[in-house]
Picture (cartoon, chains in turn green, red, orange, brown):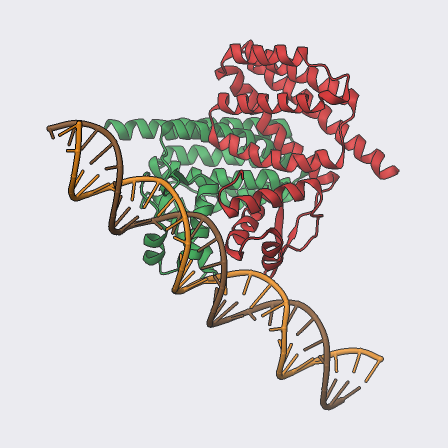
Length: 216
Length: 216
DNA sequence: TTGCGCATTAGTGTATACACTGGAGGTATG
DNA sequence: CATACCTCCAGTGTATACACTAATGCGCAA
């Protein structure tokens, strides 16, 4: 049991289910229904749903009914507009403040990881998470990091809609390596611009994958 | 009665009290204590405190006690780092998407407002709010706007620490006018850079006012 | 006197009961 | 047959009772 409090468990479960699409957009989130389903009482479930609304994963359609929010290509564009603003700033600040050795080490890891085989996908994602965590610590700005946390929550939905392909993963590794190197070198402009390029490519890839999926 | 739900009223009250400093940083927020004080039961008060924590206005010092978060000059700097990222992006997007007539009208209002007399301060702040609301609508991006909403909540604390002086207000009006004009002209770069300049001046003014206050 | 351990308690986390309201469905009437 | 109103109910909003835990204070011993 990871989460001690029932409210946290309920929240984590619902977030995961919305991210995976198990709870599809438009699904009505009745307090009693979800509470009984997850085996908690209404009080912690109510708290969990409140947090979903605060995150933008659910919204009150009417004063009486809460539903899972929609998430389409237009939302992904908007998401990346906000993400660009925050991540470029984070990269810039990171380049000014980060422990250079740590990011040099991360850059080396990005250089070493092999994405040629399917089995290494998880390893790659874990490396990304390490990078994000290190950057969060480096920027040392709770306002920025909190905003990014919400963005990343929604980003999972985007990734779910458009599964990454292998060529994109390889490029993404190279892009992250460049960002890490820029931070390690203490070059804020390069870090910001490399992040811009990375997010542009990521968005393009997702939208293209989405278009292909819609065509099929 | 503005807010129907007790939870919303409690939240609004606590936010206001934290922003004004009535509830000083470090103040312990006991559920029972605050609930009885504001005349609600623990359930809505608990929800209100949860939202404060999500906003970063309060934090769980220990698993058992929640306190009002601190807010010093370093926090103001961090706040403006995040604010710059979001507001510059908002201005840029606004210049691409906004109704030009509306912002031309706003620019004219900024040009017309007289800040020479004390009585017009409220009028000026109301104009700012109109501008912010119009920009929020124009950018049409809930991710960005939600993040900005939190930032603005904290910004009130910064303004409370360092009351604006008159010269600063006059400059601020002129800066807003330039931003509005840039948006009306559909010039994203100018809008973003004018926003950068505005935020730089605003931060400088706040920090200077803070230093002067500390010296006295 | 100081440190450790136990009992007490204050305060959170959860469950549940009650109140109220908005909406759905049925019926009656034009 | 359509529409308007009335009734009923499902579901939220709030209050409160219960459970559990962590912090505090007291006592005892070294």
